[in-house]
Image 1 (tube, rainbow, N blue to C red):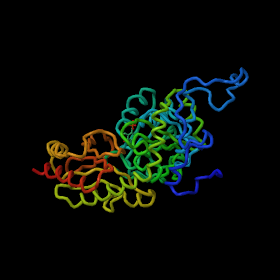
Image 2 (spheres, rainbow, N blue to C red; image 1 turned 120 degrees about the horizontal axis):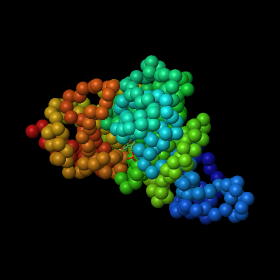
Image 3 (cartoon, rainbow, N blue to C red; image 1 turned 60 degrees about the vertical axis):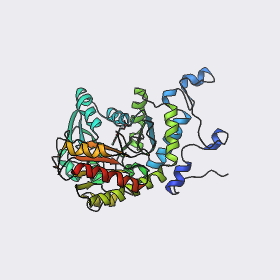
Length: 389
Ligand SMILES: Cc1ncc(COP(=O)(O)O)c(C=O)c1O
């Protein structure tokens, strides 16, 4: 068999083959799960110069390399680190590129634990943290300061799904010399490739769609050539590697991510469209819907949508939200998303400091799993009917 370059194949072909080369491990199609701290050197000279590919467990193994290489192909990145959670995939690049006295701009629609990290640890380390309207676009120019070192984006926004104009924000940020980071978990690199749109660092909670089975927490951070060394140096300085079994399971999940995402996308869109016409639903917050205010940006930049969106009930408060959630039988009440099973959670936007959008009623976030869409529809209908009485 000749060696094949998968850079120009379809995405499912890529997903089936990228990462490891079976010929490098006796022909077995999957890479070995290397449990390692110590790596032996053949002689003192090699040890002194660390002149061999692997030197210690925290610095990479054939297993972590297989996943990182696969993510590099998907992201178009120069290097990827694999870290123990999606939250670590957010915090490590922020620590890599921010120092005391720097200013960071963070979207107001950011995942709450990212905000918490910025408001506690970054502030304690002397970083000036400022939030901006996710819809700011090129208007971010007004917020840039001489000491702005990082612009952090997440699109669509956590829970409320605002679409950011990433190319416009990235253009301005880069012209001011700031590093552009994006939490790209929602789209996965299959539906949006941040580095092709001016982003420097692409962040994923691989816990979600890549792992895909609600049994692993893991993250990946991918950098372009200009930012890879500093990211990798921080990664090894912090010793924040992920365990080999989790890394292996994530590569295993990646093989089927394309077909799973197609199903998540189809079911979520079908339910979102149906929900738009349901009594008791004021709004559906899904960027793939024509009614979504960010749909034009979504169509311009994204290749598809994943399986998580929110609904806004037409009036009511916590009582109605709890009635909806308690009536569900298939949807579980639990955090996280991207797994095979459907989940629902109430959304709080009490943390927002810049965007003061008002919503007609309680917001509920739905993660649409791989179950049959008609069963999910019937389950949601029970929730809506309970919320109405
Ligand atoms: C957008 C986003 N980023 C990051 C994370 C963190 O991922 P993890 O749960 O693996 O720490 C989450 C988790 O829900 C998320 O929704």
